[in-house]
Image 1 (cartoon, rainbow, N blue to C red):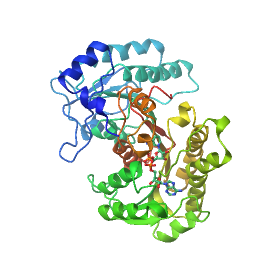
Image 2 (cartoon, rainbow, N blue to C red):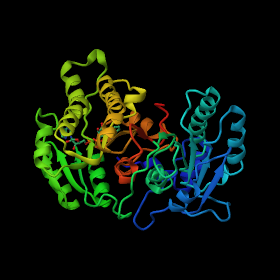
Image 3 (cartoon, rainbow, N blue to C red):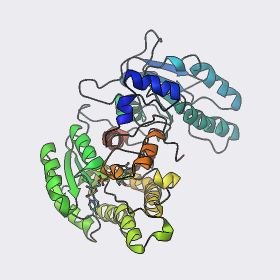
Image 4 (cartoon, protein in one colour):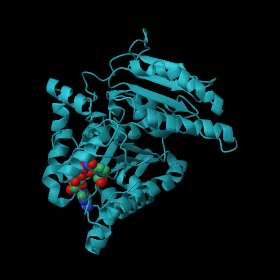
Length: 435
Ligand code: NAD
């Protein structure tokens, strides 16, 4: 499972050979740790066009301090919300062209755009242009630098999103377009433990990505409930014990799974993470119904069923957060995965449809993470050649870690992320597959 190529390219002969042969040169990514929670360096705040965003006080509270010297910023935020026509795009070039080379390794570039105005085709063209710009720049920067676009109207509503994107927690999130709504929600009492006093249920949390999600939500103060199939009960208990939570052995495909969760958690749930998932790969021509059905059942039908049951039972507390798990296979498609791709695209459909309604009720948000190639037992089972291709075919030239998906989930679960709703955020190092 270890990425030996990444270790090799960090050695002197490795550096020499990869340069000479033109091979991918992945940079070791700087991830969050308690000892080093912030990026190393300052933030450079640039503006293209005339902005009325009032961003400065929000940036002052968010992540890196101002870059005094501007010689090697760790983060660059370009406020391009004021660009209203094609001519204005010259200012985007003028702002970033002189600084892009100087951004520190594992640095961050965040472009801020305005929502597309359907009544103004010049504004729509200019703001949509930022998407192509961001995604192209993400493919150029290298050195572990990420580039993302946030569309927003209110800087305060986007504070938790900026905090995430301008921190080491978003190491494997690049080339994304994230839309943030206009209404800010109150932040937590304790910034270091934003989920304190909240209960988080994570399905499929006995191992892999789910285990990392449970661990990260527990770090953020949540009381975690580790749900997994009864066969994995021992592992689930081990994880729950380590995190001071509890285990819930339950097959999520059981018809009464929602009712049993509600019964096990009579005080309700604040964060519901649908992570359990399976694959049964085979090309459609060779795929019997027995391989099709369980994938659709675990990955999609049970997610719909339990979500419906928990919402109907009022088990999702006010300000609750639902985070489902899609996949880039559901966006780009993948040979041998018609069942899996269908199930994961279905999750995207569910999120987009449910989000506006859930929020209207009582502040519940519904979002999805869409992992790319993440180093887990699921991907360790992939044949070597395909595994190596999956690892390298992204802008960061390496696989992600379960913690990368977990950090993204924690941002979506954050009490101050109430304006982030209906989003499908890929955690894929900007995979070459998918949008
Ligand atoms: P994993 O196989 O390591 O872990 C999945 C967990 O889900 C296991 O503990 C399993 O017992 C549990 N589970 C399976 N069926 C269940 C059921 N019916 N009820 C309850 N629990 C059940 O997988 P992973 O790599 O950690 O993936 C987690 C999620 O991320 C899945 O939804 C997967 O499709 C998705 N994903 C993973 C990757 C990747 O690269 N690893 C990429 C894209 C999407």
